[in-house]
Image (cartoon, rainbow, N blue to C red):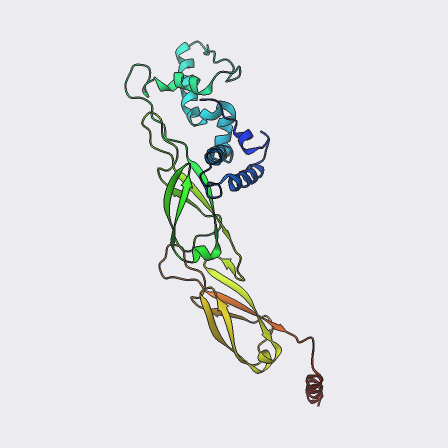
Length: 302
């Protein structure tokens, strides 16, 4: 298997920061996502490479191993252990010559196969083959806020395989879930890796969300604020009628209990909905309205 340059896959420099790597991955993943490129094998292959590259380079520990050991970074610990054992075997402080690392064009896979593929996990005297867990995959799922108001099912295509996923109501932006056993195949009979899905929740509503609570600003006309009355406001799942108290002040806040967002993985539990009233002062008055306001002003000064 040829060496894969994960920096080149993401289009970043080897000195790129974590933020630059994350930004590059998101940009490329959106472009090559199988949902946006149905039946496109090349986009599917590229998307798989992007996930592999992000898995390695987004983790400082994994990135350090990759920089030292290439695409076989997962076996870095075993390699270092084997190297130390070989050094001890040589004795007298003599070290085995490994050619100064992996420079010189050697094939990484061939090298590690010779190191681990045919050797026992207990040494060179035979026995069971070393087992390694498969590589974990990372994917990003974009949803609208309305999508996660209710629990629903969605089919994802990851590396050519369809995965039926139940998305619980109340999933948050940036939340990561793990799907066990949907990563790359293990080696030597080892278990499969896992799939980590990061949710990106886009909000195109008039509501601001903070976990299970929702917030909104509602315009209130001057007359309703002074005299009181009834108004109808939008909530996430419909409209409700509210009674306005006479003399309501600008910035007054009210709470609608249980009218917020679903609580994650808690059936039939909801947060609250907080409304802030913003009183709108009329900017264009009729002559009659001006006369009435003038009369009111005179009454106030009596």
